[in-house]
Image 1 (cartoon, one colour):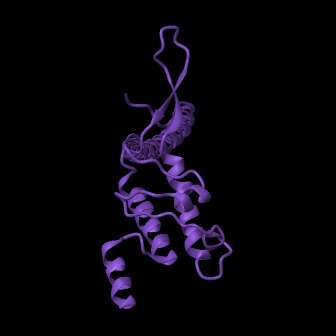
Image 2 (cartoon, rainbow, N blue to C red):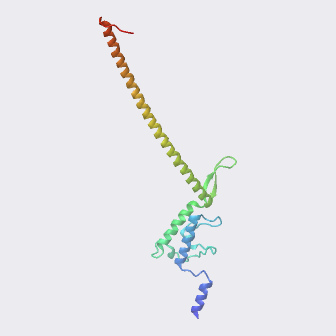
Amino acid sequence: MSENVHHLITLSSPSIQSVAQRIERRITVLSLWQKDGVPPYQVVPSSLNEARKWHDVDLEILPIGSASDFAMTHPIHGKRIQLIQKLLEELMQYQARPRKVRGSRNGAATSKLVSSQEVAADRIERSKMEQQLVTAVSQWHAERDQRLAEKRRADSAEGRSIQLLHENAQKDTIISDLRRQLSASSTLKVVK
């Protein structure tokens, strides 16, 4: 008879969960929030102790009574508690962080809270801007390489032009010497 009563209580009451199940439920919810953002009506626990005491019927999260069961050094649950700590730290970075905003009448910076959706939108916008920056830098490098190649060609052409001018000057000198020699010689006459 007592087995039937225990079975009936277990079926009718969702509050009968093992510590491991309660820990896994916290990990599931926090992981989902990390992926999709924290719903605006929810608050991320700010510490492991708050996460241990966390009770939310809608999320099927029940409190864990024993602090020793919810310790990072616990031999069975320790690694899972460390994961919860990591998820909490990551979520706290992105949920409701103060940001300086211009907009008051006197132009002074004021502080406002930023929701996780705004943070996600900021991340997407930052990612787009980083991609634009990468594209702009790539274009700049390509144009610089093209300009350097053109400058090398121009320098080479200028060097060749100077060489040809020098050769022409030498040939003009040789021609002048030959004309003088012709003029000095009496047997040959310069024809114009």
